[in-house]
Image (cartoon, rainbow, N blue to C red; front, side, top):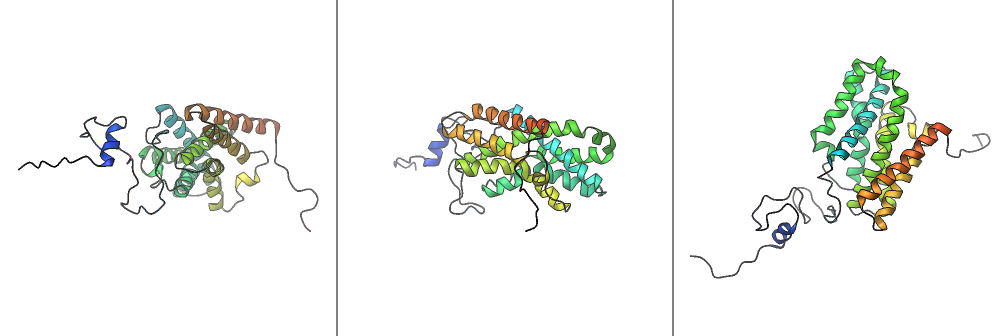
Length: 266
């Protein structure tokens, strides 16, 4: 027997029906990303969810995904070259390729509680470093000859990753300073983990030219723009351009961070 009680839909259903892509009647497929915090599977108190009013990080524009994968590919090539020069086997080369290409994003996602990391939910992010590692392992003499152009492309990857990492951190509720730091971690974290694995001083510390500083600068420009009310689609290219220009000028002009003067021993 039908009940005469007026049953109103739950708040989650109402909110979902008002979001883009949902069925106006509330009967469509569920959203890919929940609009309310969930208590399922390890969700705890204080767990952040993305700000649905901003950029949806589950719906990257195609161009941004292509550039993101290109950056991973370039970083993975650099990591695989280190493995080949250390005379590692194919497994070791692939590990270093994946670590260099994906390590920074892994660290960032864990720190901001964006789990599981994006590289574990999209098969393309795993396929690209594997392909780059195998390519380097098989054709490392040819890849090595292109190391200088790869260094220039690395600057493009650095600029993209620092901005994408900073904006994602801001989307998960971090303030401007920690979000900028997460952008820098995204850009340089993979290379640092790679260098630790092979037992050498991380390149970000040993490189004679500025590397992490341009990444931090580009990330800071992006998050400050967000704080001032600019759209992410505007601040992203501006921040990336700042990082890219700074890094290329540092390579060309041999800009270095200040170092201690006088003898190292005291």
